[in-house]
Image 1 (cartoon, helix red, strand yellow):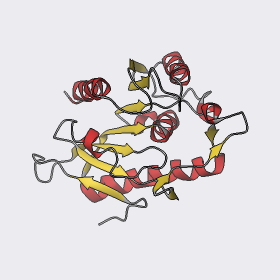
Image 2 (cartoon, rainbow, N blue to C red; image 1 turned 30 degrees about the vertical axis):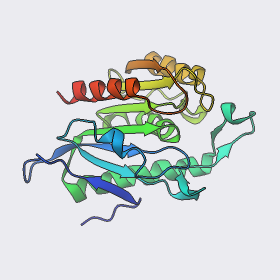
Image 3 (tube, rainbow, N blue to C red; image 1 turned 90 degrees about the vertical axis):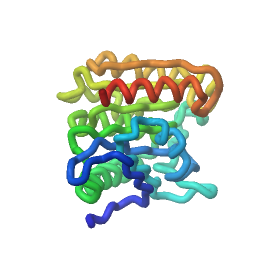
Image 4 (cartoon, rainbow, N blue to C red; image 1 turned 120 degrees about the vertical axis):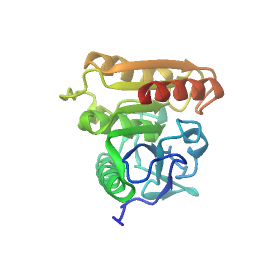
Length: 219
């Protein structure tokens, strides 16, 4: 079996036909969490999908992080990914996706990303670097990193993207999420945008909307 660079949890679908490539969702957790954190969310997605939940590379406060924060522009609400850490994690995720496709017999044309917070920021950057690699992206409570905000890649036109925000989110204010939506729409992505009650977390209304979005992409 092909080695997958990042530690991960793989959950195979119950009804996947033997030998046939199946769709998959790669799950990217938030800062200080781990590969188990978003499994309850992924469990609500269509049951014909493989779930591959990746662990960020660096330990942090009992969990893990994809990158350190660049706070030079101000406080947490103005933070950006540390450039070197961010680049390393982006590359590790791409390598892990490629390896998992081989290891688990995934359909490379039906790969989705689901990220929360740092995982959402990372997911949007991965999409803008290589839109043809992903069938859809769900980015919850994140923003578009400055390093990728000016990208306008071939293949982004019509790409389905769900962007969720918390109306009371004080970690990543809704205004940053809205700015990401505006840019994604400007480059031609097919964006579904939802603002939900609560703060920096995934509530039941947001989860319901995510499940509906992914199910419509899989239909």
